[in-house]
Each structure stands twice: as structure tokens, then as C-alpha cells.
Length: 353
Length: 273
Image (tube, rainbow over all chains, first blue to last red; front, side):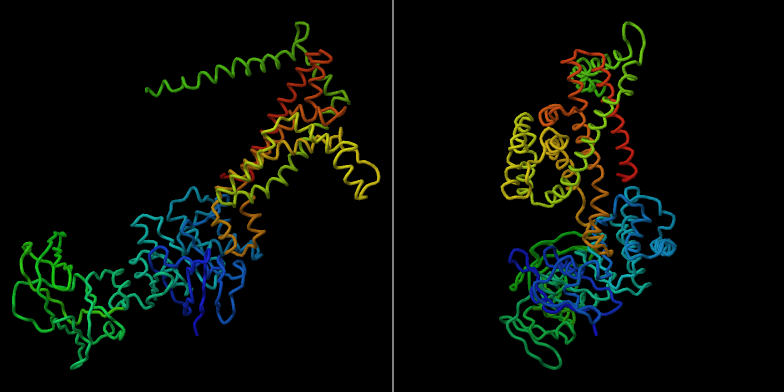
């Protein structure tokens, strides 16, 4: 059974629904990311779990108990804020000890536990510093230590790395993943950074307009997006609306007007309601040769734009079915206006809603 | 512009203050140590050994202290409420809060006389509903002074506190709650210590303001003297400018001592504020 369950939860501001009949299950020990553009409801979901927001309808179950109306301070969840939210009037030690002292832990144990957790986040020796005297990355680690030291039942991160510079962000996300796995603590992580979410999560939930469009492990989402929104979000730029779908010889036949394409059967084409083919620009090929290679679909077109990208060229190819973007490594580029064949492998086609 | 010339911008202000404030104050202080052409501390000895003078000083300090504490107790929750409001409501409430500062202290004191007098609004209402059977003696007592001064200075503490509280990251309260603090504990452990700078500045303004206020104690205090009215009496009625200067110097010293200790307190309560 899932550790955390949101059942038909709705949240509204000024009669505007942010979440409506929202459902989510999280297994114990997992790190799950909520990923999506701003306004998709990911932060709302996190704040709801933390208890900063109350659900208008629905239930929030945690570890078999109804947490819907449990106040924030009784939940024992650790929350790491985007702004770190360290208490500026308290030293690193007192910041981290804050939660323990509220739990009436005796001072000797407070000392041991604070020191232990500061070691875990590699901040031993910084006890006496004040937040002002720390760098962004150090503040972030204090914030994590402060959330961890209370031995929370759930750890919540709200865009924790977005105020850090790029190098530090990569170090910190490795750190977060290491600590999370070391302590085996169930974690919900909110970010709008795709790479960040994909690199640290067991599961990624991609949200759009208050709905989870897909919840899968990162590799599956990356290879087999379920909707056009997700496909675009993770870098699919080419789409073909098809009119008819048939199955023959263990393959899927797709028809648009007079054009016929085939797609291999795989998890990416299993979606029976899919109405579009999606393809990455890296998976397409542009060629002037007429011989048909096996396993390839072919579409005639003209090179409309050719851009040098450094390692490769990017072409926009104009066809009867619209414009396609192709990234291709080659020595001498095709010229604008050239008639070409656009090839796309049938095992790289994904069918999306 | 050359950077070295920038200090010239300060010149008019510095000149004005030196001529009309610093020099007179220095002369006043200096004059207290000279009488009939020779050095003396007779004025101070006289002041500090006279029971009547000391009682006036004690009353003044008492009135100022109670006024300051009352302003903090009333102003703190109000300021917190205002700091949480949206910009429109905040503007309206702040304007209402500073309203007392916009009316003349004479007018304000007369209103209090009408309310607090023997046959005033307060007493006649209390008599009418039978809560008391003879009028309360409020007007012309230290209590009346305090009421008038609280009314006068509450805006100062509210304004300074709102300024500080607005800048407290609301996530800090959430963080405290997520760590197990109830709303009240979070307020006590986060909002209160972080408001200390505003509280100190506000308290200094109120305390020093109460200590030196003249109109309100003069009108609401009746025969009850405070240092400022006593000073006035010595200078204008009794024409004893030497003693008046001594009193003025003592007021200046008290003011600086108060500011010094308040600042000490601030550093102690909020080490990295």
C-alpha cells in the first residue's frame, strides 16, 4: 500500500480551481518529483501535503491515517524552502536545533543529533555561524539539515536549487539524492527543471493545468511520453496528426491522407487513444538518396532553413504534412531549397494524446 | 562631480544644526557648571538631594515607562495585523493609525479633558450604567497623562513595527510550523525576536517622547509636575534659568542613557540583526 495518498483532492483560490479531483500515490522510500511549468499546480500540491494549504474537497491519507485536517506542526514532515527560510536571528546550530527543542529533546541529545546531521550535510564546524555568513549552497544545506534532524516521516522540497548557480546546483542535487538514499526517506521534490528532476527521481510526475499527465520512472517518460504536452516538454518537436490506425504483421499502420507510415509495437505506441506521432529532431534523417532503407518511413520535402549548431546542422524541412525539425551531424550541409527525403525510423515513433 | 566635493551637500544641514542646536545645547550644559564666574556642581547637588525634585523625576520616568510598555502591548499586535494586509487595506489602516499625529496636541488634550473630566463622557457613561457610584478621579493625575501620551505615541511604534514586520519572510513562520511550532510559538520565536530592531527604535521614540512631552502633561496633568513642565515653571514662572538648565542637562543625560541601554538590549536580543 502507498505511504501517501491524495484522493480526489481539490484546491481553489477565489473560486478558481488549481487542483480538481487530484490523485497521487507515493510509495515508501521513493523520491518523486513534481515537474511542470509555473502555474501547473506542483507547488500547490506540495503545500497541500505540507499542510500550508487546506483541501476544499478530498482526502489526504498518510501511513494509513487521515491527515486531511492535521495541522502543519503535528505532521512531522520536513520542508525545504526555495528561499531556505533560515531563521536569521539564530546560529546554524540553533537553526538546526529548533525542531528538536520544540520536541523537548534534552540538550545533550540535541547537541549530538545536530552535530551528526551537520556532518551528513558536510557542515561540521559551522555551528556558530549565522545564516548571513554562509554562501547559498551552505544555507541550502543548513535548511536540509534542519528538516532532516527531526527525523521526518516525509521530506518536501520546494524548488530547492533554483537560487543556486549552475555548478552548485549539480553538486547539490547529487548531495540531495545521496542523503535521501542514505536515510531511505520518502521525498517529494518540486522543480521546473527537467534535468534536475530526471536525474534524482525514482518517479517523475509531469503536471499540466492541475493534472498529472504522466507518472513514470524518468527513463520511461523520456522514451515514451504519453501526451503531446509531455512530448514537447522533453524535446519532441515533430508531430503528425494521423487519421487512421491499423494493425498488420505485428506492426502499427498509420495513415494521413495518401501517406502511409509504420510504427513498431513498443510501450511508446501502446497508447490506444494516441492521435499523433511524435518524433525527436535527433531521430530524423535528411537524405538526397532515393533507395529505401528497411525500418524507415519516408516523406518528401524541401530544405527550408539550415542552421549550424556546432556539432550538427539543424534543418527545417517543409513537407505536405507541415514543417519538421531535424538535427543531423554531417560535413557539408544541404542547401536551402533542395528537394530531400525525410526519413524516420519506425521504432522511434511515439504515439501521444 | 568630484567625489570629494560631495560632503558639501551636508553643509547647509550641518551648519543649521550646529548654529541652532549644538551650540545652544553645549552652552546650556556648560552654564550649569558655572555660577558667579566659578566652577560648581551646586545645581546638581541641589536637584539630586531634594525629595520634591526626585519625586518629579520618578513620576516622569514612571509615566514614560508605563506609556512605552502600553504602546508596545497595544501596538505590537496591531502592527502585526497591519503588516499582513494587502497594500490597499494596509494604506488605509496606516493612515488611520497615524491620524493622532496629524492633530494638534492642544486639541487632542482638550478632547481628553472632555472625555476624562469629573462630568466627562467616561464618568457620566459609567455612572449611567451603574458601574460606579461616584466619578473616577482620572483627569489631572498621572493616569490622564499616560492616556494622552499613549494616544500620542502609539502611531510611532506602529509605524516602526510595521516597517520591520513587513520585511520578515512569511516562509519563516511556515518553516517554524513545519518544525513543530504551533502558530503562537512560531510567532513568539520568530516574529518577536525579528521585530526587536523596530521595537527598540519605537520604544526609544516613545520613551524619549514621553520624557520630554510638554503640552499633554501640562494640560492633562493639572498640578502634577513632570520634568518638562517643572523645567518650564523654573525658567518662565520662577525665572531660575540656572536650575532650568540643570534640569535640561539631566533630561539630555537620561535620554542618552536610555538610548545606550536600549541599543545594548537590541544587540543582546538580536545579535546579527
